Image 1 (cartoon, rainbow, N blue to C red):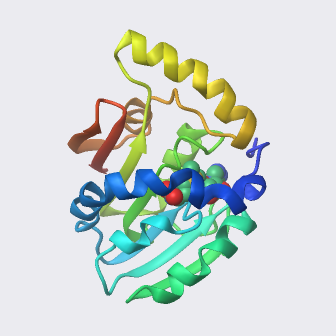
Image 2 (cartoon, rainbow, N blue to C red):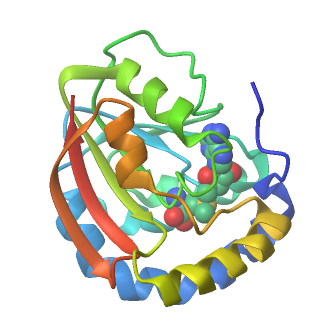
Length: 199
Ligand SMILES: C[S@@+](CC[C@H](N)C(=O)[O-])C[C@H]1O[C@@H](n2cnc3c(N)ncnc32)[C@H](O)[C@@H]1O
């Protein structure tokens, strides 16, 4: 299996600076979406943990990330969370968890970064309980031809810098992996989306 050639290790030190504005802008939509997190939660691609501040209190979360440097930088946010977050370095495309382990799986701007989103989504389906829910806050390729062209161009740059793709069709990828999307909200144009899906 291919894993990310570009690791987030290289951008970990400047990641919060790069994302600061996004988090302020997306806070209300994230808080509304994250109300649906319940039971045993798997949070893939925790990064530096910027969205932890938008989590409801009291959750039991297992958080994974491929990048050790990003995981390290999430430390103070994890410590300050009023609940339990257990972190480990792991590839979300091939986790070590048994089938049907989690009640909820959360992805935040990570299906743009995993090397093989289709394989990752199948893996998430495997470890999600049959009555569980996949909760996604993701950016995708726009259906608008002008925006799509711009995003495809910018994607070459972000792919080179950090291994992020701005041209993913995450809705279609999730459906192809067998998920049924039952809640779909456009947060910014048709590019940033809040999605909920089940088996
Ligand atoms: C754009 S960052 C998002 C971080 C955080 N969720 C946020 O929104 O601030 C993408 C994260 O996904 C992680 N990642 C990429 N591929 C991964 C994989 N195969 N398994 C686990 N984490 C991965 C990266 O290391 C990085 O921390």
